[in-house]
Length: 338
Image (cartoon, rainbow, N blue to C red; front, side, top):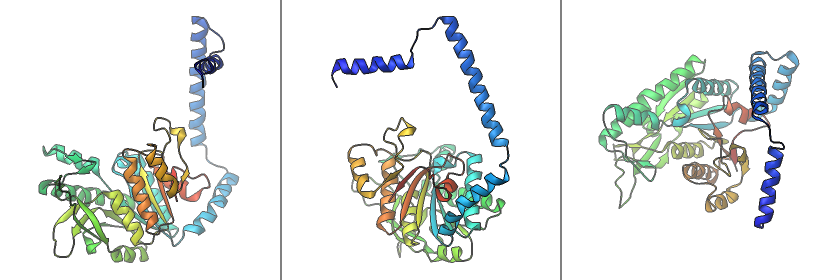
C-alpha cells in the first residue's frame, strides 16, 4: 500500500471512529451516558447470572450435552493443571467440580499438576534462590527436597482434598509411587541441571488400576530414577502429562493454562487460533507466531499426538468451567491441535 493510500485509509478509519468534533460539554455528556450504559449493562449481566434457567432452557442444555456425554463415557482424558492456573481459589473449585462431574458420568479422568509458583514461594521463604536456565529449573539436592515437599506433600494433597469435598473419589500419587514415572538426569555438557530430569518411561499400571475402580488419580511430577538409581527427579509437568496420556492411550489431552490458547497476536485475545493441525504448527513456530512459553506446550501436544492421542487442547483455565465447555458443547474453547 502506498503512503497516500495508507494515510487515506487511516483518515477514513479515524473519521469513522470520530465522525464529529464535539464540545467539552458534549463530550462530558457523552461520557456520562456511556458510564450509565455500562452500569446498566453490568446490572443486566448480574441479573442474567442470578436468574435461574427455565425448564425449556435446562432441557435444551441437557439435550445438547447428551451426545457428548455418550461420546466420553469410558474414555481416558488426561488433564494437565498448570501452576499459574492454580492460583485463584474460586477457579480451582470450579475445576474440581468439572473433574468430579466427568468422573461421575463415567469419564476416566486423570489430573497431572505442576506447582512452579508454590515452589518458588517456598524457596523464597527459606532464603534459597530459584535458578532457571532455558526455562528449566536447576534443582540441587536441597531444592529437590523442597520440590518434593511442595508438589507431593502440599499441593497434591490439597487437590485431593478439594476433589473429596466436591463428592469425588480421588487418590494422590507422585511419579515415584509404583514406579509410575522413571527418569534420568538431563545430559548437558554446558549446564548442570542437578536433579531436574527427563522422562524415560511411564509405567501406568497403578493409574489404570485406580481408573478401573472409579478413582481420579491426581499425579505430582516427581519421578524416580531408572533401575538402580534411587534418586528423585523434578520433571516438567507438561512433558510428564503428555507421556502419561500416551501410556494410558488417552482419547484427549488437555492443558489448562493461564492463556486463551494459541494467538496469532499475543496482544489480541480475539486472534485465537481455534483449530490447527500438526503440519500447520511447524509454520507457526517458524514464523514466530508460536514463541516463548507456548513452544513447550505445543511440543507436548505434538508428543501426545505422535504417541496416539487423538486430540490435544490448550485452553484457558481462568475461564470458569472451561473444561466442561470444551468437552460438552459444540462451541469448544481454546486451541485444538490435531
